[in-house]
Image (cartoon, helix red, strand yellow):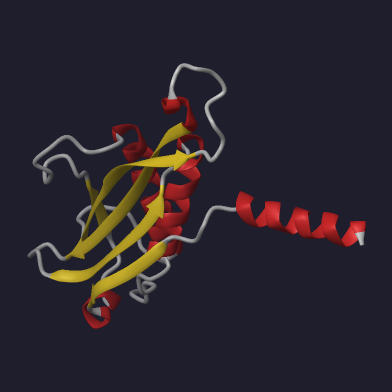
Length: 172
């Protein structure tokens, strides 16, 4: 019986240790127009955004991941580009409060019985257009970014999940 409980506890801890799968959604796709195109160019998000991008330290890694994933799909990052790849990461920061059922350990007040944490959720948006700015493909991937030590891994999962939805290149 103890072995079963230990095995069950290990399985529960393993399930908690793996980050959740990002939620992806493709909002527009035009596979016929996209299938004849092969060369792409990544467009940095700063000129398109009206405000400073959230988590600017993640953008170089994000660009690198997008380039690698699109290359694996059969696309090439060369000029002159046939596809413009726009990408940006929107971050929502929500406070989370956990109220503890135990009384405070001292007379300093009840505020010690409340734990405040921050929960960041990121929405990665990728938009593929042709040089005339006609929409070829658009999708989003929503993932958690907390804790901050796992944010790179979580962004990698979001990029992989989203780019897997882009039709593979069949152009010669």
